[in-house]
Length: 163
Image (spheres, rainbow, N blue to C red):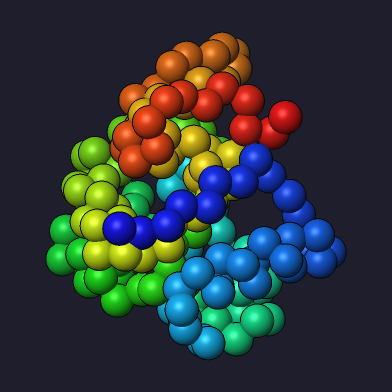
C-alpha cells in the first residue's frame, strides 16, 4: 500500500514547506523521484514557474504535470503518467470539480491503483481532502459548502483542511 501526506496548506515559495517536501520525497524511497503534479482542482491553472513544481525540483525531483481538462488527455495518457511516477501531488481548489473530473476521465481508478502499487499520494487543501471518504468544501455557487464524495483511501471526512 502507498502512503498519504494530506496537508491543510502552506506556501512553497518561501521555504515554509521545504521540510514537508523533503519528507514526501523520502517516502518514495528514491533520491530523485518523479513527482506527478495534478492541478485539476484549480481548473488546470498551472505554469512552468509554479511554486510547488519548483520546490520539488529544488530538491532534485523530476516533475511532470497531468492536465485532465485538456483535449488531448485520454485514459492512456492518464495511466502512463500515473504509472511512471514515484509520487503524486494534488493541488488545491474546487473539490467538487476535482472529483467530478477524476470520475469523468477515469483518473480516480488509476489513482486508487497508484496507492495499491505503493506510490506516495499527497496534496494541499482539496488535494488533501480527495484522499478521504468525504470532504466538506465551499465548491458550490456563491461559495456555499457541500459534502463531496472522495476516493475513500482514508476513512472518514475532513471539513476544515486549513485549520
